[in-house]
Image 1: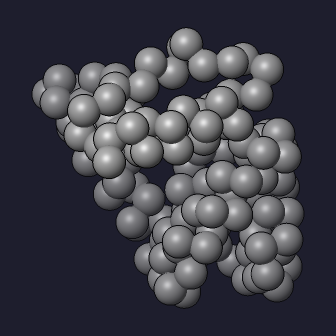
Image 2: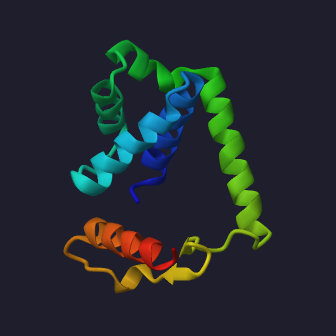
Image 3: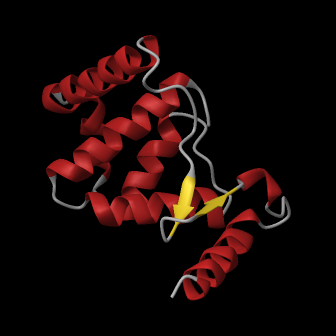
Amino acid sequence: AGSKETQDDLTMAYIYSQEKARSDDFVEFMFNRIHREKNQPEGRSDVVEALTDFGYSEKEANSVFSSFSVSSKQKMIEKTQNDLVNSRILDGVPSLIVNGQYKIVLSSLSKKDTIADLEKLIVYLNEKGK
């Protein structure tokens, strides 16, 4: 999951891509980078590198972390999350349900290739549910 600082930086990168109307593409890009390529950001320089690899200029990528609007939105998200945790509304990782009837137990998936195993299982359950 990375350090809190790296998580905050990733949130800010997401917010920036949202402001540029590219958040869906950015989420897909980062999912592939982290889970398929096993390239987990370790710090801000890795997040900047991801932003430039995604297509933003180096100047744009570095400006993310000094943007008042991005910083304000990140702080608001963090406050909301903390409020939900403190009120015990948010208390764990959400379950993955396929077709409203099959709960996937993530710990039962292959540790060797979790993503591929998850994809196969979702396709199978989706077909089974038709």
